[in-house]
Image (tube, rainbow, N blue to C red; front, side, top):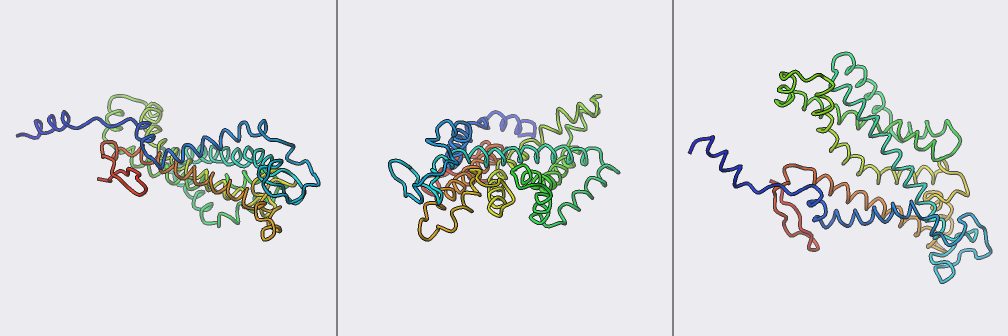
Length: 307
């Protein structure tokens, strides 16, 4: 059998790849992550409407444990923890999502420009990336955030200042690999302009990895934002932000641990959700796994066997 016949038979007999959404929803771990992310996004969107009381309303019910009147208890000033948690979801997650969007856009623009233009443009942009990556990230973020009054905007600017460089380097590598592919050469030979090649072939090829990176990094951004706020660089009191709630409750950790456990558990579940969803999106977008059957895994999860 000749090579042409073998290729034709293979193409006919090869089962069609499952759609990306189908592969994502049939991954048990990705479903857990998706449920967690959707729940937290709904809480961020509608939490203030569901809050039973004002999150900054000081009462005499100090350090009450979870009960009928306060489902998650109260903090050291008698403020309802459930209300503060619901309000804080919008601030913490909203800041993380906006930071991830800005980082993705900046990294995408810089990486595509460096990889596609090449020459002097590539050299200048990549030397800038090297300088940013050479400075310890946390130190640079603290320095930028410290230039402004403590706020979530200052924290976000500090994170965006350092986070985009890693994205730019990844995108540049992808563009350098893509622009030498045969279909790019064919498009150029067919008379396609540089902008058409960029818009129709280069950008679609780098968007998937950027989406996966951004989804995975949202969890890390939530951790860093909460950490910087815990250190006093984020939202000032009495703003109901999750990191600030941890800072307010740390002195009561031994006597009234629920004051720390409530925001700490919210941060942990949010990070877990975005990490699981990011892993699921990465697997769903991997073309090598499109036709690979699922295999039983831990706790009954059906894992894909990598070729």
